[in-house]
Image (tube, rainbow, N blue to C red):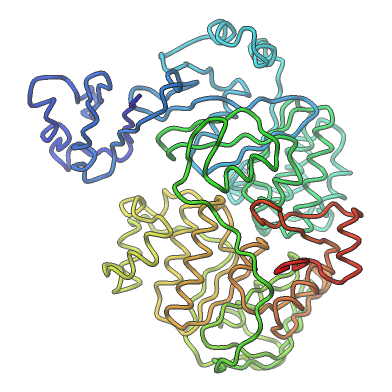
Length: 589
């Protein structure tokens, strides 16, 4: 089976003189393979198209995709018009359990939520439908009762948006006012305490950090009295301890409600979900949602790239988790040494940093809770802020990617990156930076039109494009899916190794930090009150210190070797704590 996907936002017939029509042999022979609608944009006749791919190759704007589908996917659940995005299958909401969705961005997760909430009636690829058609389609299945309630208007939805940095644009005012406006369950006071929001409750929404906005968005979603809760990415900007607390909250909600969660932190998805649906396909082209699977089985199948029940390979290569003992420090020349310094703010927060040194060509991880001073530390190193006591004059060139990214200039991505680096058009740049970060499809897009994940990848590339001695990346994993995180990790690591440059990475993704880092800087203290940064230390000592402060231990999956959070108080959790091995337990045996 073959479908044609036309990205009508990219199609620009006035600029290309209908190249797709000119080069298609079926059009030249008189068949109506490609016709043009009233708006002058092409519509592909899938019945006449032979899938030769000429129009795909000739289109200068990458607006056309011809996609082969398994024969069993003969009828979509929903399709956005002729040649539009097609969704196959739906997750199954069920009261009393958390259903997770694991898959790349742009695969139809938002469409699923719109259908399950009743805001969008599935059309099964046949134009407009009504709920009677939907109920007839699902008669005799587990989805019938759910959609009967949706059709009767008996399903109330509460949704946490993916991009919390958009909240200040939609709401102006105090945090208290936003939360009070959605609280119809009477749980607000408890949520404020559990999510540690009391100190920001009287602050303006526009003054909150990303982590604070994330917790406010979660509280707003949980405060509503609903039947169906949808949490779209709970982990960005939250530290590990906060992610676990939020996971416990969501599990409590699911005791008598239906909950659907999209999450790219595998450790959190693992501990949070009761079942997992895998989403696969071609982003912006088509998406397939599998039947629910056991959590461990689903995650491991997705990482391997092959789904045995569906007999589908969703990726040519497996996402592998490198298992290695903590690396020993090597005798490498020192790039720069920095003195101890302190930084204080009027609000009362203070930070002290021990003196340390950075080595040439190493990747240094920075870990610690939110609100402890990590971003302040790298801003001082980058020269963006000045210390109050002590001097910071590194006398080296630094390229810095901030934690929060904003696109203010409506310029194409390729123009932006080319303006940063003269190497943009070189084969090295395209193969080592652009290709791994999958930037080619973004080149003609405007920076202001990019999603959070797309903008993150461009920001990582921009940071690595500059000519510098040290590269600092603050939370590069935010809004990236599992595959994109793996590729970003490899890109940063390979760049540092090949160019012999020093890199510093601040992140809460434990796997990314472990795979990237040769040493760690661990932050301790009391969030929003004071922070203390230790000197750089070895990975084993640093990981044990960091996770001991959080009272969390990790184990390795027996099949894929991916990190998994131990249940607190379990036999393995107690054993690892007794041995003082919070992360590297039994590795190498």
